[in-house]
Length: 522
Ligand code: ADP
Image (cartoon, rainbow, N blue to C red; front, side, top):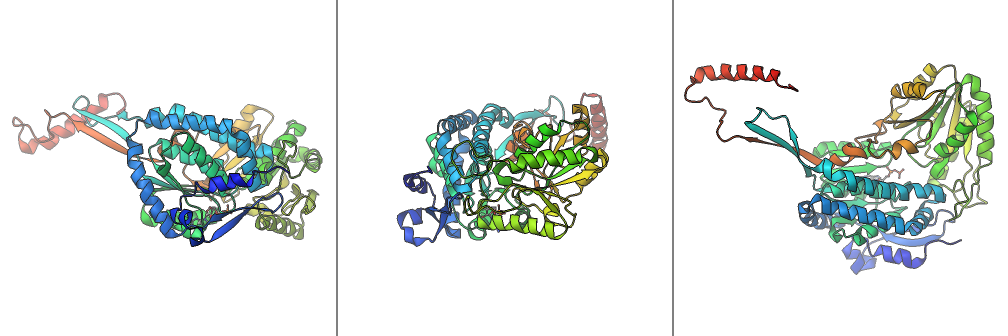
């Protein structure tokens, strides 16, 4: 089976920003990276120390000053060149993402597309959003007020293993455009996709020190980033996100976090069930369900429940699950034995509590060490792990509901609030249901992709699904501090002029402010 050659990993390791290890490899312990499909060893990455992170911040801080001084159009041009390079090197990136994660090629393509769409979008729109803007001044004519978007400084980016390319690139490129430097810790299981993306940024003309990649453990390297950064973008589990939020709060440094989800899909009466079953396969099992936006709960109108279960189970049983770097497989494997263990635990727990397995349900060691069948569960009680906790694997529970009202209630009955998907007889009905859901994103008539790829709109979770936004104007300006600069006309001081008695001046000011209400927008 073709996979990236050893020279690819050797070349990418030169992009690791741990100079002490580059000079003397035995100076740092390493961690093995394995091909997920087979478990075979690919390469070793160094585990940096907290001091390496401190050094990386010093280099990034020095580089950031010159970068922020460059015109925003020049910074945007680097993003455009990066997008072009992603397009040219698409196949090499797909091979790397697949090798590290074990996802099928179509799921890996989502990452590549996400990178070039985001880079092109921000390169085109970002400069306008970052430009200084005039705002309502204290007094017309005599005060001018404008807001400037100041870069935060050095942004810490901590990324997970499930979308190792797009989650490493897309937040960072927004932060770079806004004039920041980056210190990044990729997940230990999947550092090479991030390194490949950063290498393309180098080739696109990004100054070398501006983006430091420091692999290592969450506790030591991630912890050191949390202690030093001027803003943190974290993507990962809700438990780690909550811990890091506490530490960022105690430093009074802002952050965003994109965390877990237990995303519902609602099927109302009168929809084309075969079509929804096809879409649900993608929505539930892309990246083998290891996607914070994938669907793990389906609520179906009781009148359609039996038909949908039959169609969906047939479709899931027919899915092509296999290793491979070609476009054939519909699903690959899980990223690690730990993730496989969670999937098996959730299924066993649900079955022990009375659930039935309608499709799948078993691991597939014949295909590779971490393969598991896509699995559909029914009759899952609310206290089962598979119902209440994020599985982050290819497992979905289907339940009947008596009405759309009940579907909305049950969909909202979750500590998470990332994304929901809605299928109704009409778009208007779908939109009405969407507005009642307590999630940061809702898609009508599809899985997660239309919301995720609507780059102009913010993407972010509610509740335990996260804080803040990526994408859109919000996802760019979050990497800036908004500074108001008010310039007062020199000829009008706010002190009392000589012809007004000092004691009467407050009253004159109060009357003058009262007159401001006759101006538009006051
Ligand atoms: P996952 O289940 O996706 O591994 P985690 O939240 O554990 O979710 O990990 C996401 C990222 O956060 C990884 O890069 C991981 O190394 C890092 N990480 C884990 N624990 C910590 C921590 N205590 N401090 C900083 N980073 C951490």
